[in-house]
Image (cartoon, rainbow, N blue to C red; front, side):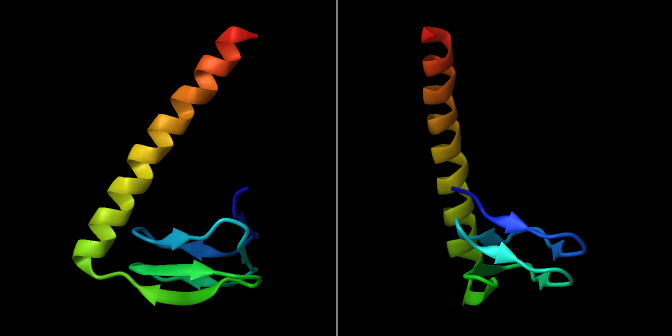
Length: 76
């Protein structure tokens, strides 16, 4: 499940949008925040250390899950 970002929304760098969230038209998702909900709203400010740690964790998890998908596709 992913997030939905509607037209004319702005998503700045270093943000996290929670799965299942909907970023509505004209919303500006500010850098350094976690957004969640329908409609997506600011949930939590990410400090520098937390931001770096969360993004690294997400990137590492994504790479792991993507490799699982590639292995599943090869098996077909």
